[in-house]
Length: 131
Image (tube, rainbow, N blue to C red):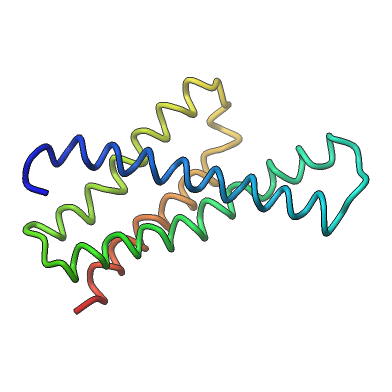
């Protein structure tokens, strides 16, 4: 993992974003077909907007924890640096996508900070708690 570390971390961050979006889609599908079927489309859209930050925080914590844990178990050189750079790159990409989507930051800032703090915490703990 020594060569092209930054490109690999960008790729991993993109893969993580795709994974979290897929988990969010699955959650909304389960909600719409099993928990609360037969509603208008707007109900499911509102639910998706409400649940997506929680999905991002909870499953983001888990994904970042597992990746940093893997790096530490494999004893990658500069593992701690990787564990810190991974969420930073993810947050930068996430910020770019959110800005490009035209989201109003004042409405979204608290959720953004909370969800990404969970990812940072997951990455940090994944590295520190693994021996």
